[in-house]
Image 1 (cartoon, each protein chain N blue to C red):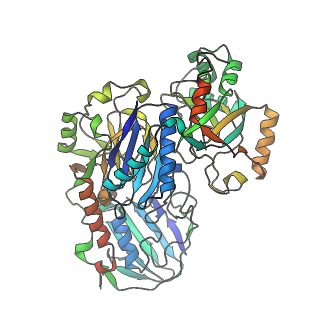
Image 2: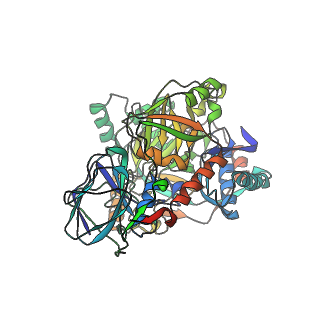
Image 3: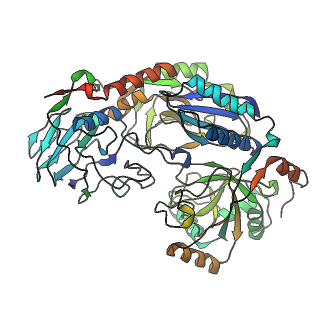
Length: 289
Length: 324
């Protein structure tokens, strides 16, 4: 549920966990980002950083500038200033990613895992089975069939949790057990009900079945998309995965290597939760593509 | 410039308070775990407390100096010598070009700090020189020192002849027992009353499977409140699972039955509860404790935690120094 009054829970002397609800839903996450945006705009002295997550915001603060009680009072007032969630709009960019589905690199990673760690069902086939899909073609159609909401950032520099905005495209999957020791950089995976692009070659647990040549973080800040920040995503961004063939994948990869790739970003949109809810009411959530 | 002859076990460039402003993007702050000893080392050599220095974990490095320098050694006693002559901790020391500083295995404490006048002048990353090994950024090439590397230094300050007053130094436990202050929360209500009492009344052993990301603890079983057991499926199947949320630095993160104190190179979020959080004023104790040593946790309020932090901050100033 989404709480009427948020809970403020101390995390030592420098952090406060603000719990806005206890459910994993788009609405709760939209509230999180609406409140986070208000906190940022308010520029409250002593509030240092925010980690907006699925249903919580971790607030870090400087106890020499603001007390725990004052954070609670000021941030609590901002939460109350949001009358109805329905009236909220958030700035939301749409970022397109070229994706090679059922690619050779995630397959090689899977083979390596089977050889060295444990035998398991091949990730794309597991996703087809667990989600009652007909075949790999439908998996690709379903996964690339909707926009994803950037629900949270973190865990690994650059990593974001993506939530499908169309219930017909929700894919769920168990996580690797034990986890992988490595994952190809920019592999795309599904775990629980969330989707992620791996920012780098890191350990991982999501079922992987695709890869994008477009980076999502770049410490050298060479590509135009990273001039302002090394991490691409901001909370409230949306993502669309566009299936491409190997030739297109290689072309984009060359542009990335040359340092000339321009991420495809629409930076002029607002997300209205009222219109989103109205659209949801028109679809049959049980349908698949 | 300093040449690394031997790197030690895991020696990293750190600065205080580390990398600020990127926590929301998944970057832990890094920085020295025992920030009290680190700041005092900088003060001794006339640096601002924020200047970059070295954190030496368990076994220190061997370094050859390419310029005259004033250095200070604080924190763990690693039996330091300069060209074979034993060096004292907690005071500024003069080193001449070509001399070799050798730090060995920690005899008391776990982390030794080395400050050099002018500070270490590696390329800052996002406004900090602190090494964050997991992401491979900061410090020298994004990781721990390696033999053959060269550490660039800032302009010398040549301030010598100072030491830290005895009362202003952290006192490292010699009996292998530590009392660590925690604030209950954010998720202490996921633990039942028996479990909460057990946590505060038990001895916890620091596991050898610990690093700058997390300190694993070994101790009794945890028991859970009703809300941890009867919950919506999106919270996960284990009682210690919850919907992914942000992790405070210092959180005692409960993974199944294993508590892990999340320290300076922490993961910023995840799907486990954090029933208690170690206060910032207790971090020097984490930094100086060794595997198999014993922690007892003491609950304090947020207000008490902030008062303790101010006490240490006040000790990290010029008033703590005296002439040798």
